[in-house]
Length: 541
Image (cartoon, rainbow, N blue to C red; front, side, top):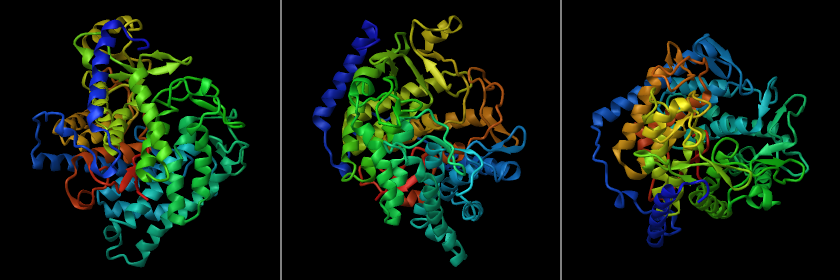
């Protein structure tokens, strides 16, 4: 195995042999009959009282309202709140990203007054005008995904929740979500007008000015298909899914695999807009690659008939990850941790990871459940534990943006920390209100029903509440290696509403429409919903 010392290779080989043995007995492709993971893994014994679970759900709802009220007071209608300077900021096109990113969570929390505020605002956005640079990727996952999800929720299981006593007005507001989704997609679709059909990643809407070096990355190309396909399915207009799927073809079948596919199913990062050929061989499950792999299995969940090829590519990527990128720290007592490295220069694997890549445990658990393949479940839980260690052993209780476990690259002032904990802080030690570790806790809890994952999620929330909470909201912090989190960096990201608070709420909520309707992933059953990468639940076709 590349980059691993002999003792680590032996430990890892034993783990992989277990995966293979489990797979021989448990492989199946019946989506509706996934094998319960608790059949094979003992329960931790941790059991939370029902009253405690409810109080935690209430605390998370309060955190949402605290964040929302601060945004409305000082940030609205801009994209996000800057809670320390008590003003708004526009980093996401200036259309009010926090409103659109936040509406789905407000619906699930059953906050009617907040939802009505959000609907009124969304119905009046003019998506044909924008003075700011647009990211097609971010606009798709936050705005388009947020509006489509809200439409799916409010025209479906939550229709009576928002329309009771309001009659035609709220019905029209719900319908405006779909109308506005079409308006936004129509404003964005010209970005696909390249010789290859691969979209331009950045542009100015009014002038059609392009900020690009004629390249896009695989996340920017491969994280459009869920939202654009759902829009086609809702409207009956195939142009949207056709655009996204045409671009995706260059990733499903790589034109120059000697460069673009260093391991089976694992791709390079940057692709040329002119001809769709890969320009490099570095990558992994972190930034600029992450959600491409995430959507491969999620598209299969969305529609197994149309997107079976996506599932096959996910299996390739997952198996290559297990074979080539898996790594364990060469320290004791942390040698039971499992991490996933990054690759560069073809097949050279670097022993470093990121908070962004920590969604991988949850993604493997999703894949293991829908494919009824226990090896992915086992591996996913091990990855959840690895990322959890970056939280549990951090002085603040929050994991850093970047971390490593290469014994040859440990900073001199962290050698003792590394020997004890199996990882060290990377060059970026801030926390940006990211959701990925909590997202994986959600999947681990749903799959195992072991309350230890709820407890881990609560410990993460307590640490965030302690270090990131301000008088008017929550903010990113500069240094998680300090108990107080370091300097407060003055930005409440819109995905704080969409992802962190949503996953936390879903972990603890046992009441209301969300609980009755099983909004989210349900092991062992045919799925009704799938989350986009911004945690917006999309109704399955």
